[in-house]
Length: 507
Image (cartoon, rainbow, N blue to C red; front, side, top):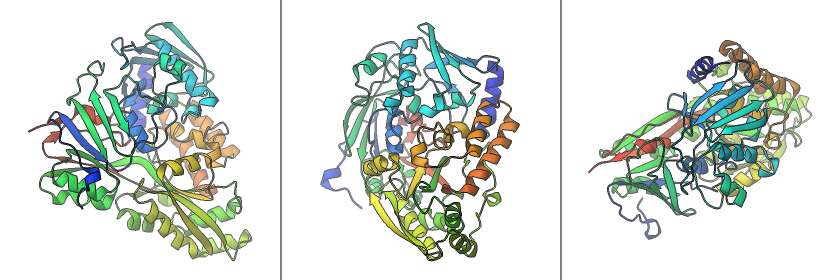
């Protein structure tokens, strides 16, 4: 498939409270953006991190080959141009000759090759490995040319390459084994210092090939209590903040000096079941749970209705009416009948894990679900965990059920193949696969016609909702708050903060 067709394909998928002494924020120059968020990064390895809080930070330091803009269009990052061969089995990139890492080294094809070899190495534990398993070999004919030779046509791989989990890192750092201990990318900001769960200090990268960053740097304060963030905004100690709690977000417009940005996102709230554990091994039990959940009630209670009930596909080009999916209208009697059919008429006990703070709605979601499932005899114990403990537990698949907020993508295959294919690198988290899911994912991977892909993934979504390994709940919004003298930030449905590259701070 040539470049013109590739761009058409990319376009089609795009249709788509006071501060305590310990949290005092030092004054900064007007050219430095003073920022706050409630959840800090859990690590610095761009290839391995799955927490939103980590990806938001790393997206400012590292760069992938290509990225998504605010309209979900694929645009240049480290690469200036890209082209698929006519048979879709070769993908060639030309790198930006001005791109260089923050250690002064030029970004070359050798760095790209080393980065993807690291991602593909199972020992790495890369979060997005399953997106790139069709790569058979990587050629580097010169310093600015990279050729990916594929085992099959794999158009969605280009969208997968927009993720920071596919960041280009220095080959020298990979060889030295220092990825994750320090952050050296080619992105718009340098990470000067990181005090976990306290603060980050970033400075503008004067050598960033993407252009001139409008601020000298960003000082980020970690304030776990979002009412403290709002207080800091009110007293003008913070210029810009990421808000996760919709209750806090709804208070921002009441402040004359503040502005709120509210953007629908692709990320989805979900109740993940573990079908490898009894009795979730039983289809009827999983379906009973799906029928017992009132998704709109969960949304209204936990998120103040700030969102929309969703099926598995959240991207605009593929999203369908959730009412068409299995048991999206609550049916308690059907749920009880399914429980009896599975031999659990008297119910059972299970534990659901949830993270404190991210999302801030997790505890409320778990409580509403606990109450709803009690009506069909399921005694659900809620176990709250610190985010880094939760992530480790989640990655091990060590749970009966999990309340989760998972990231969305512009393409269904790159969004879900790591969970719902037999080779998916997070199959041990999903703990469920069948031939139908796997074959539909493979069909969608190879199909280049947008209309045919939509039909394939519609069947995928219908089947996934029916077998109910997870119970999709809703999508929400990303919120940012800023002083009125802060301008230029462009939010994105992906939730990225890359738009901070355009931010200005006035008098």
